[in-house]
Image 1: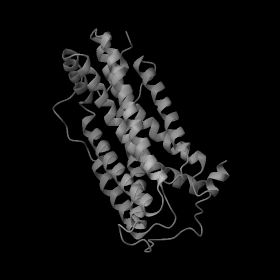
Image 2: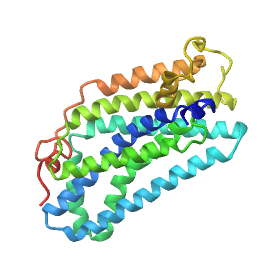
Image 3: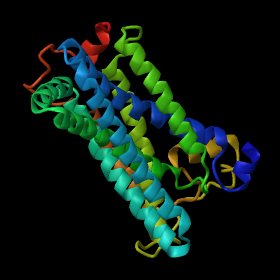
Image 4: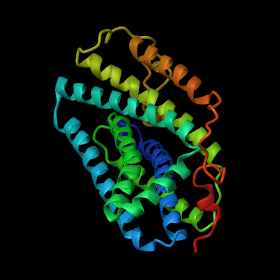
Length: 303
């Protein structure tokens, strides 16, 4: 089946599963941490009756994210020609903007997100079930929209394959299991290191999506330079090989990018990595426990 995937011009099945699976684990664990903080707060504060409203908000957010993914993916897979390239390009660039903003936001917000969520849930409990549901919906939906747009942009080069979606779902299942184990104290994760390295991975993936979007807009004649090739290594870098399909499937790499694609990829990677990796400013609004996000909830067993 991997040969068929390669022959059709799509990355290999393994590359599609690994690439989207990594996204699923990273984004799923980020969402799981948010839910874990909310659940731990309600349990420890004696408001277990409000848990059903958190579940309702989470399910509503999942439904919204699924609708966004299906809508954009359906739009890009049912039209052809210039219109398809145009939709793909716009969807890819939108995904890059959202993912970049979320990655950079998490870099500075991670210090206070746990305390902010607890404070928000405390106010929501006082406000009633609708407020609890809305808080859970917004907290999970924010992460989910990022994932949906990222996957749409990531999966555009897979010729309509369902393997990226399967890989994403498997990654989310793994993230859910890790979240449960963290909640009960069976597993501990260095969140600072995890989000640092996976953030770098997402930035590299987003750079590939940006390059893909640029070429799509060039094909739609919205951007110039479609015939200006930056380099062509296809004589020795075979895209149908295992390493070629991995590079294409995970990073949207191609052996003959246009000059504008190469410039966009390089410029984005340099600028965003510099901003992401520089020391984060120290904020005065830290969680009252002084710990990293979700660490208190993970460190204390469920009661």
